[in-house]
Amino acid sequence: MAATAVSVDEKLDKLRAEVAKLSQISENEKAGFISLVSRYLSGEAEQIEWSKIQTPTDEVVVPYDTLTSPPEDLEETKKLLDKLVVLKLNGGLGTTMGCTGPKSVIEVRNGFTFLDLIVIQIESLNKKYGCNVPLLLMNSFNTHDDTQKIVEKYSNSNIEIHTFNQSQYPRIVTEDFLPLPSKGKSGKDGWYPPGHGDVFPSLNNSGKLDILLAQGKEYVFVANSDNLGAIVDIKILDHLINNQNEYCMEVTPKTLADVKGGTLISYEGRVQLLEIAQVPDEHVNEFKSIEKFKIFNTNNLWVNLKAVKRLVEAEALKMEIIPNPKEVDGVKVLQLETAAGAAIRFFDKAIGINVPRSRFLPVKATSDLLLVQSDLYTLVDGFVIRNPSRANPANPSIELGPEFKKVANFLARFKSIPSIVELDSLKVSGDVWFGSGITLKGKVTITAKSGVKLEVPDGAVFENKDVNGPEDL
Image (cartoon, rainbow, N blue to C red; front, side, top):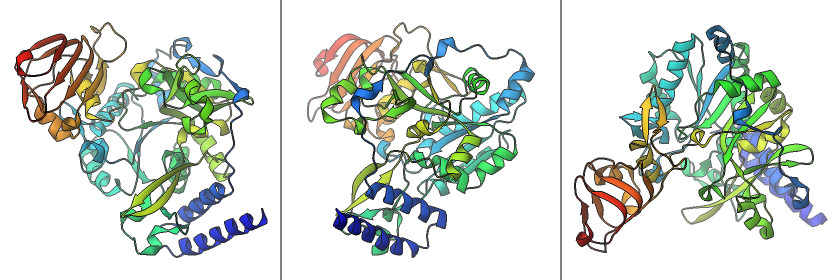
């Protein structure tokens, strides 16, 4: 055992010496990185004892419909909202959807980007109640410069917009456990942002946390910038303030599409996030079952700012480490990350709230874009509202082939977005092009054979139909 201990210490010492020479990052970032690596090397990952897992009660995961209605009084609501800050995680690029720059500047609907909609929503809140809810954007080094330029267009809005960067950590070369930037990789490829668990120390290190506390702000609502359902909910805020909950995770019932999402459990007297990576192999199928683990984490989080300050200063937020192996120009590297949801177990009076599915509307791919651009939704004051004429509470499942993966290609292939209010599922494969005014109902599959261009004509109506070539149109 002693030999291993020495080798771990040696590894750390060598790494520490190399990291100290990196001029691109701050002392705070260096310290945070070394702390993360030493936790990883010490193997302190706690094993979950499966038999100790308990299903949370309604006191721990509160059903949304049991929350009391917030005050009707405008002045009371203003007081509540003046305690709130909205923080959007804005570190991701739009590369998977074929876009350059931050993902939040992809146009979602009616020419508005994710960021436009977020700003319009908060503007309308501030205007309606006369409150001052600021917007914070946590960028990564990948999105910072672009975002700084983009937010200038909102300079005339009635919102205070703050931006700050999450940490920038060096990728570790797997072979000798030294930082990639020390090997001459000084460009962006040598670095990584360490997951959204970094939101708490970065908020503090940036100085923004102290500014917000000085303004009398009490809670931050953290959400992914691509979740169109993550809007300010006065009912939730009111509940947290009244019950002095330091942390709240919004969860929602699982569908078959969400079986890999983290779930909340009661474990040794505390509420805790259980991710699929922590589940012993023999229990993975049980974890995925909708019967036993019925809810999953939406990553909409409400957190008390004083509690964040207390825990960050005490260095108490030791979330589970997610090792993420990558390859850069043929070199195997490791990046260590953490998730903000895993912080729940360190906060006092932490709860989950089981919210309606409408609060989880992420746009991860062009298939999601098809949903939100269709007649299934309308846009009111920046809020994406579901069409009440759809009877099925679940959204249709949509599978588009690789020809539709990039936003530009997706938009080119639809003259207009089809009507899908009565659609159950759509699967499109091959070189398919859509005319305008098309209606899809029930289960529809459209397949263009290899080398064949299939054009769905204007005004076509397909109900429970398999289209395998021009003869089926």
